[in-house]
Every structure is written in structure tokens, then in C-alpha cells.
Length: 209
Length: 209
DNA sequence: AGCTTGACACGAACAGTGTTCGTAGATAGA
DNA sequence: TCTATCTACGAACACTGTTCGTGTCAAGCT
Image (tube, rainbow over all chains, first blue to last red; front, side, top):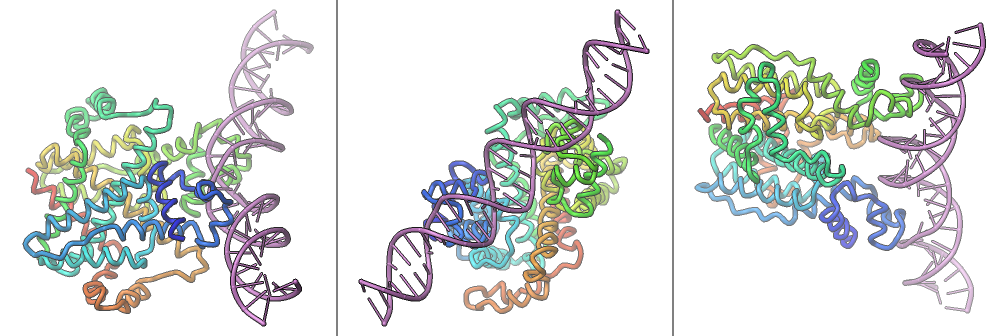
């Protein structure tokens, strides 16, 4: 069963979550689809196992009240990188119940950091929820864009330059702000947008004390 | 073609986005699946049309610099309620390219409000992106929970009391903070969590001036 | 009026998906 | 060695989105 989860993660890492079908996974394991149901009750169950394995890889720091911002940001970056390493898997993470032991371990770690930073318990709980939700959504969107540019015959690639031109070519009387700030709308190398939003939320949480 | 979009939205409103299949939609229209492709090139295209129609319903206020926080919050609440009115449709919204005219209209309106509030252009652009992403993710999660509690033979319902008990019954030595603050983790009537996170982000954006 | 042309609609089929069932094989116990 | 149990798997079912070829029906032209 460990082998099933391992090969499933391998498929997701190389071909994306969309390609993780029971038949594809069975094919890699040189067997038929029905055999998988001896080790896994469901595909939803397989998804939970994948997320669990993924969460188990995360390293949670010992809470340090002086560095709680960097610590909580570091955990979110770890989650982000894990999600992006297995493109599309964040979709499974969004759909999962907060019951799994490994995800509870992550929640416990994040909660410990926020509380050590002096954030009020209610704010800490809600901020953690918001952070997890945002990270998953960010990675889901990123993997959707990546997948769309991968297939689609590379016609609708829509890289940043193309997007910038489209924004700038809009009728200025109907879209004055979009045309004027097309550069800002399409700005952001790497994870600048991610860093910005995380700073937004963490700074906001630090005010609930 | 208008009629196709209307009936599709009706199906989503009553049975959820998962139930919106080409065959189901064709069945409601008393025809076969192939006939839909005379009006719609794709299911992705249908999704875009639905989101466009949904965005067209939103009313965007004239920017008032003195009330920009309430205004931007109001727009987000409108989007949230539209998404929740058509459960699961936020998934289509997440997957959509920011090219559609109606979504651009919404972006223009939100950007106008933020800029009128004095938020720096770069921060306004990124904050708008973060807000839209969070609202979509929040509604997607909500509809997933709702769908799970709808089917599943009502066994895994996991209402708040059940979740609270599960958190409280965890081993305290492994999960000290979760067991101690189980109440806060499961707190939140209605959209308290939503309001909290929106305030987090808007307050954070207001500091970029 | 008769004929042709064109556009539209649709039944059937194809390649996929997750999942289940009955059976065949292997393995362990007496 | 015989039996019993349990695992593994081929085939099938009910779905999904999508396409192809055919039919039907109306309008336009001679």
C-alpha cells in the first residue's frame, strides 16, 4: 500500500493530478484497475493518503515567539512548494475533511506558532484557516494555468507579455484603471503575489493581540 | 443560446455544479447532448458563459474614497452570495482566464474602489487578485462541504458539534493547542470566518499607501 | 410552382472515467 | 495431499465530454 501511494505521487509529480486515474496508476503497477481496490477503498481515500504523505514531509519548527512571522511564513512556503511539486494535488487538499492525522499535525504546528506569537486564540484559528485556504487556492490556480499552457496546442499560452498587451489594448473609456495599470496587474516575478498576500494576512493577524 | 445559459444556471442552482453535465442539460431542454454543441463550443465555453452571466449580475458602486472599505467588502459579499447561490460554480471561476469581458468589468470596478481609497496601484492590483482568489476558494470549500453532507447517506455529516468532539477527544500530549482551543477552531456562525479574513486583507491593503 | 441549397438538430457511437462482481489462482493450514 | 480462505484481476456497468453522419426543415433561386 505504501508502494501504491509512492507510485501515485510519482505519477502526479511527472504528469499532474489530472493524469492520476485508476487505470493509469494500475498500468504503472502492471495490473488492472480493480486490483487497486484491495489497497484503497476509494479514489477519495487515495487522495487523502496522498495529502497525508505530503503533509508528513513538512517540518514544523519549534515555536519561537521572536520569529513567529518568519516561522508561519516558512510553513506556508513549504506547503506551497509541496503542492507545486505535485501539480493539481491542491484540489484534493481543498476537498479533504480536517480529520486526517497528518493534516492535524500541521494545524497543530501552525496554531502553536501563531499562539506563541501572541495572536489571540480566535484570530489564530481563523488566520490559520485563511492561510491554508489561500495557499491551496494559489497553487490550484497556478497548476491550472500551467496545465492549460501545457496542452491546448500552445496556442492560448497567454504569457505575461500577451496578457499585458490585451489589457493595454482594452477600450480606455470602459476600462480606465485596467488600461492605466496594466503593468501592475501583470507584474510579479515568481511568487511575489504569494509573498504579498501572505504578508497581508500575517500582518493583519498580528494586530489581533 | 441565452436559453441554454439560463437553464444551465437553473440546473446548477437546484442540483449543484456537479450535476451540470451535457446530458443533464440536454435532458432538461428535451433534446440530445449533441444539440448543445450548436450553441456552445465546449463545456469550458459553457462555464465561461455561466461565469460571465453571473458577473453581469453584480452591481459595482461608484467609488467613494470615504467608504472604500465597505464598498470593496460589499462587492466581495456579492460575489460570495452569487457563488453560493450556484453551488460549486466557483470551481469554474477559478479555472477561467481573466480575459472575459464581464470579469474584466468586475476587476475594473474593484480596482477603481481600491485606488479611490488611496491604495498604491501595485498593492491594489495584488490585493484585488488575493480577494477574488480567496472568495472563490471559500465558496468552493463551502460547496464541497455542503455536497458531502448532502449525499454520503448522511453518515459522515460532521457538523460542528461532531467536529468539536473529535478535536477535544484528540490526545492532548500530541495536540495540546488543538484540544485546548477546539472551541475557537470550530467557532463561526454563518460567514464569520469570511468576514474575518476579508477584514484581514482589506486592513492589510489599507497600509500600502 | 418546383427545385436546390443551406443551416440546423440529433441518434449513435467513441474514448475516457470510477467502481463492482464473479471467478481463478495462490497460499496457508490440517 | 486435500481443503479452505483470501487475494488479485478480467470483464462489465453506468457515467462523462465530444464527434460524425444523417436527417429534417426552411428559405432562396430559377
